[in-house]
Structure formats: C-alpha cells, structure tokens
Amino acid sequence: MDLLRDNELIYGRLLPVEEPHLIERYNKALRAFGLPATTREKISIDRTGFSPEVAEDLGDIHYLDPNQINRRFIILTPLQVSLPVVHTAFSNTSQLLYEFLTANARVINALTIKDVIYGEIEDSVARVEDIEDLLSINQVEFKVLSAEDVTGKAAELATMIDRLKQEPEFWRDTAALEHMVGLAKVTGDIRENALVPEQVIFRHNAYWTSHFGGLYVFVDPDMTTVISDPSAPGFRRSRPWQVSYLSLHDASRVYDFLVSTGRVELPRASWIEDSGYLEHRAEMVVRNLIRKAEPGRDLGKVDRVWLQTWIHGHADLIAQEGTFPFLNAAKREIAQLGQLRMEEVRPDRRFLVIRARPDHPDAWLTNRLISDFVPDDFMARYVFNKQGFYRDYEGFDPVWRRHVVETLKDTYLKNKAAFRARLYGLRD
Image (cartoon, rainbow, N blue to C red; front, side, top):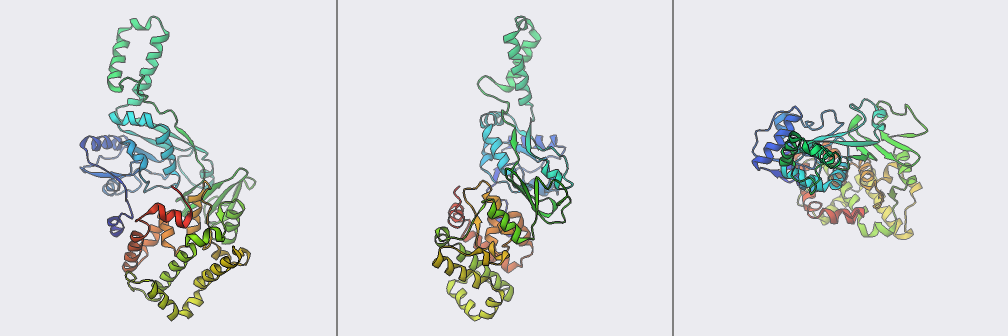
C-alpha cells in the first residue's frame, strides 16, 4: 500500500493535525473511548476523525468502528466537513456526517473553538449478526459529547437561565448564581453562541456495507431490495412482502432491478457518443488482456498506436475473449440506431454499457454496484468502490500496480470532477 499512499491514492486529502492543543484534544477523545493516547506530534484525520497513523500505532484499523456498527467520530474543526471518509463499514457514513456537520454548523463552529466533539452515530442495533439486523436500522442518532462537557454545561446553563426568568426568587440563590457564572466562563454567552446541536437524528437510506462480504440495500416506496451473496445469514429468510433479495451473482436479475427502478441510463447515443464511455471500457479490457497474456509487461510507455498494433497481432485472443468485439459492435449499433438492443445482450455484458442515472439520489451507490460486475475497469472501481479496488490491488503484481497507479494519477487525479462529469454525467 506504500505506492498508493505515496501517490495519494489512499489516505489522500486528509487534514494534517500538528498543533499541540489539537493533539491533546484528540487524545482526550481517545481516552474517553477507552483507547490509549497517541504519542505522535502530527497525525492526519478524515471527516470522521479517523487517523491512519493512530490506527497503525494501535494495530487496529477499526479503532473508531469496533463492531462495524455505531460508528464513532472525533471532530476537532469545522474543516472536517470537506474531507473524505477513508475507512468505514457503511457507504453512507460520509453523507450522514456531512448532514450532521452542515445542519449544526453554527454549534460546531462555536464548540470546536473551546473543545473537541466526539461520540457515536448510534443505530438501533449494537451488533450485526444477520441481514435482519441491518434492515431494522431506519434512522441514526448522533450521540454528542465533548471533553470539557461544554455541551452539557451549556444545556445546564440554559436551564438555569430559564429558571432565572420564570422563578421570581431564583435570583436570591447566591450559590446558583455563582454556579451560573462558573458555567458561563466555560461556555461563553450562550445567547449569542448556541452550543447544543439542534439536529441529531437522520434517515438511514440506501447504502453498501462491508458486512457479510459486501451487501447493498436499496430503498423504494413499496419495497426494500437487498443485493448480496446468498450465503449471507438471513438471506431470503423473512418479510418477502417488504424485502426483495437478489444474488450479487445474478447479473440478469440485478440488471432488471436497476432498470425497473429507474436507477440506470441505458446506452443511447445522447450520452454514449460524447462521453467516450465505450472507448474507456474497451481500453480497460485490452489492457487487462495484455496483463494476462504477457505478465510483467510494462504498460507505462504504451500509446494508442502500440495498443492498436497489439490488438491486430492478437486477434484470435481478442475474438475468443469477446468483450472488445462486443463493445465495438455496440458502438456501431448505437451510431446507427441511436440505442442498443439490450434484450440481445448477454446479462453479464449489460453492465459494460450502462451507468447510473446521474440525477438519481442513489447514483454513486448504483455506479458502485455496476463496478462489481465490471472488475477489469480498475478506474471505475477506484472512483466508486475503493474497498473493492484496494482488495483487487492486493492481488496485482508489482508491474501492474505501478501501471494502475500511474494511470490513475495521469487521468482521474488530474481533474476528478471533469472525469466524473464526462464519463458518468455526475456534477459535484
């Protein structure tokens, strides 16, 4: 993973934390979780407060996610709202944190001037043992604490202010007034700076989770759809009138689900021709064929002319594998008819030519699911399915690893937004 880290393809865009008072605040949160303090003078954190350096020292990448449920968080600064989430068991953790941070921005701005905020994103279950446990989670609640209990003291002070306003004799209680002064020294003027988060409950909608080898949950008005390996405990066990279960290995049924629920764009000239989508898929296919046919070949210096020459020289291999000719035929049919006759396409190949509907709320999750059916497209895997990409990367030989890293650096990392907009129609 060092090559990925050195090129900011893992743990990239994290926030460096090196101010002594912030390190000490972070340590207060760690101790509150029952964890040892870090001795490092500099760490980096993501949106949730996860630090790869702390995880390395503790020997536990799940130190903020001990049961992969009820995710913990540590907030040192409002700047965390713009950071990625680099390690999580649920794909929607990032969105939930974003909603919490933006909904309570004023409070968080005030609190982090004085203190560290920490706590848990609490679900309705403490441990996931089967699919039904996951489906029982309809919403999450942010349980918010602070090391100096600024939030608790602000709430106590607010109550005492209300009593002062409503109880005529309360102002005669000298001890109470002195206590209010002491609280105000910690909280400041709470009439000007709200210090208690106003919105802490958020909906738990569609997501991917790492549980049971990777599982998708899509939520529609009349039906919840689970897509996973059939060996997952609880698969097809209950509530067939509310929950539809699809095997992650059943390309035909998964495709039909995505089309019938309006989550994908079918291959039409209106977006295919300008996006370069089929050309991108074809190049990924050819590069992987070269890797398998000539292990160890350095593809770092090859250009399109070389690739075309290789294709002509290995026509039998290309024809036998079949994906490259299929994509070329699809491109010709779309140019002639304006669309592709999907009923004539083999189910597993349909995922090569579709993408998530960009305006659908589940667009990122849908593109992630599509990438599971197109594993040779390492760029799509990296963009939408980093856990899958990192798992794939572990099986790559050193030469292919370098090629993958250089390709991502020279394309996606140069302008992520433009890449996603061109190929997937996504506007950040």
